[in-house]
Image (cartoon, rainbow, N blue to C red):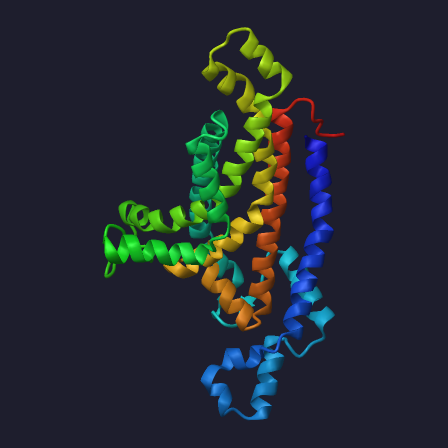
Length: 321
């Protein structure tokens, strides 16, 4: 396990380097001008000399490789630079928003895994039955539904029509304090929408995995010995059938991040979505690079965790093979 983790850590270094350089290259080719974005309306009447000096102050007058290398060397020491658009240190921008994004993604992912696995097991138990057909059809339908559409639909139904849940934000309007009750109520809709957007893959993977496991010889032998159907399903088929889900966890992280950004935008959740959009449209090099590195590390960690869980669940899979 330790050897595989070390190998993955070494592999992550060139990946992060390539990703950060790609961010600076794409930003440099972008038609958006970071100087005009920083100056705002004042840039419309500013002289060319003022704009040139502002370009020097922001460091965007330097060559692409130079900007990337300077950012990278400072980032290694913990200095992520300052956000030109938000007028804050990048570390502060991320620190103020990351916790809320992690809370939303963690709750939604946990709900998707648990509910999706339960539905998949129940569907596999009676293949071809009405429940199996209904759950499978719903899963395929939800696969095609974009998270922002689900978010708008949920907001219209539960916030506007029924009025049982808040439409967005983190706290009630006019509230000056953040309380657990308010956060929990405001978290329900965005977490549910994000969970539903991830749910189909877990339903379908678990259903297929458990269905295949029920046809394996050891499970058939357990049935032949007269064991109860519940014991055969939960004690024999479930463990084998859930193994594909462990690999699915890592592959769903990029979709989870993308979905979280869309859901945060729809529900005005105070995560990193707004900062990501501003960084992209304003070509805010330091903030854009830091957020991209953060997403890359999350994807790499997700894949590592899924491999470790798979190895722990199935002793036949070696960590150092």
